[in-house]
Length: 434
Ligand SMILES: [Zn+2]
Image 1 (spheres, rainbow, N blue to C red):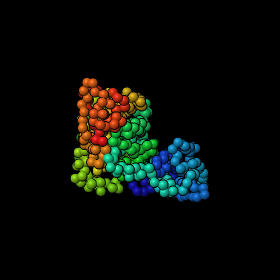
Image 2 (cartoon, rainbow, N blue to C red; image 1 turned 120 degrees about the horizontal axis):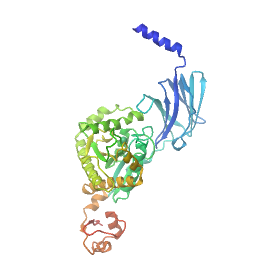
Image 3 (tube, rainbow, N blue to C red; image 1 turned 135 degrees about the vertical axis):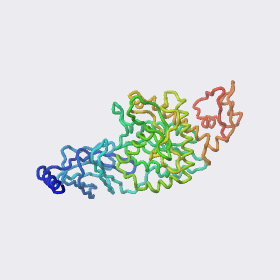
Image 4 (tube, rainbow, N blue to C red; image 1 turned 60 degrees about the horizontal axis):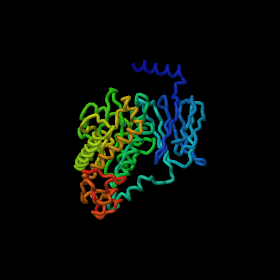
């Protein structure tokens, strides 16, 4: 048996000396911290990296590798990569040279094929000028007295990971980024609330890094936005999920969690490094409080989705699944599946401004309702929510109410999120404390 296998291998080597890996293309992505270059390979290959200065460049030598296409660069998100060249320093070696705009540290790894991709060589370039990212700065101004409630909004997928694909090839990563940006604007327009975007561009962030960014910024809530696919194209509507302790609560939830968790394999990050630590953190009692709050926010969002014009819910209750991205031990976290991209009608709506506006307004309203009911101490909402209430009766005007309670018209508008002077009879107005 062993001999036979040996013979077989020998035959292949003799008969096909050119059986080597082939480079199929180059993709580049950049996020605020790094530039990621991905070389598609037809097979595993040996490679070496080294950097050169004056000018700055990174050289990649791939053994027994061929290149039959021209490697292009998408200048829109090429980050610090200025140009790409290739050559053959030796007959059996392919050399790819990335010209860089500045000195950078590199990290690299090979990825096995996944459903969407072949073998890949991933090279991450971290600029060495030591600049800190904008996200870190925000931490300090969150802690003013009467601070704003901070909502971290996570657009799912990105970069190498397109997420689910619709029947007409609409990509989940693109539509959820649009919805996330709209949701951030909705949140910023609410008095006492402020949004941060975890991903604000077409690049991939590892699932754990997503909630770690929210934790570092001391966010009060983490909301992950998705639009996934299902086998049955008839299935439609929005759903809201929280983390389940014992795994998925339904077959659909389980399948969905698997496809969301697979994202890290696509993005090229090993999943297991800290899972043990995380597992024990999950047992911590603080997690129970977080999960309780998560469930409450999810309920408010679902309620708001149900009552909002132009939005349809998939199931009338909050789902539970083992989404990695929701595993923050101390930041309440929810995941909203805005629609099924696999449903042709919803795929189309996901690209339309009207639906994007409706769904982001509905999510923002649900979040607002939660924080007005349960404001964290030290927040502007906590300080103002406990002021007096006024139920609008016939003949009331906004100006009249403002002077009766001796508050300014602008603060009355702000706290109630009003743009003009129109008030509805029977509605309740919050009277600001000062
Ligand atoms: Zn997704």
